[in-house]
Amino acid sequence: MTLQEVRSLASKGEGLKIEFKKKAAYPEKIVKEFIALANTAGGVVMIGVDDDGTVSGQRFIEEEVYVMEKAIKELIYPPLSYELIAVPINAKKGVAIFKLELSPNRPHFLKIDNKRQSYIRVKDRSVQASIEVWEILKRSKSLKDMVFTYGRKEEILLKALEERQKITLKEFSKLARIPKFLASKTLVRLVLANVLRIHPQESEDYFTLKEVGV
Image (tube, rainbow, N blue to C red; front, side, top):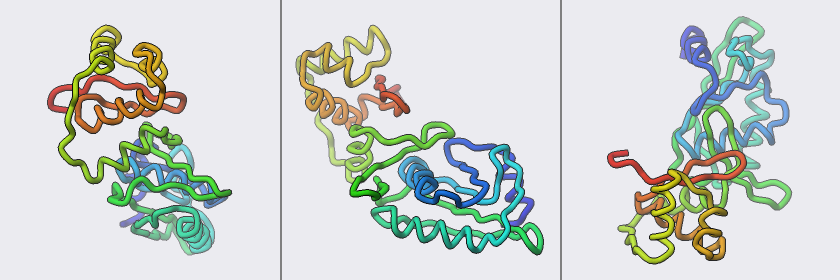
C-alpha cells in the first residue's frame, strides 16, 4: 500500500469498516475496535491518522505496532487474524494499517478482569454486543435449517411488527406476557430463520421484519 493509497482510504472518513487512531495509547480500549470490525464486516484500523482523516503519522511507528500486537494477542479471544501494513511518511514518521476480515471464528471478545465483553460495529462506532447479538453471531456460523414454528407468541410478535414496524426485547416480553429469556430465544431464532432482522444499538437493540430479498 502506498502513501497515496493510505491518504485516499483515510479521506473516506471513519465508518462501518474504518477506524482512525492517532496513536496506540490505551491499547486495551483500541482492541475493542478490532473485535467490533472482525465481528461485523471486517475493515481497517489505521494508527497514525487523526480523527479528521489527516494522515499525520506517528514517530517510532514500530513501537506503536508492538504495543497493539501485544494487546491483540493478550486481550482478544479467540485469537484474531489480521494483516499488518506499515507505510513510511518520511524518515521519522509512519502509519500502520491493520486489515481485518469478517472473522470465521466470531464472536471474538475482550478478556480483561475476568470479564468477557464482545463488540460490534454500528455505523462509525464500536458498541458492546447484547446477549442476542452474541448468540446470533455464534450460531450464524453453522446454520442448519431453522424451523419457523408459528405459535401464540409469534402471532403476537408479527402482528405488533405490522402495526409498529419495530420492537425491542422488553416490548415483546411485555406484550406477549412471557419472560425475557423466552422472548430473547424467540427473537434470536426468528433472526436466524431469516424472518426478522436485528438492529444493534448503543442503548437497546430493536427488531424489524426482514425485507424480501434482503
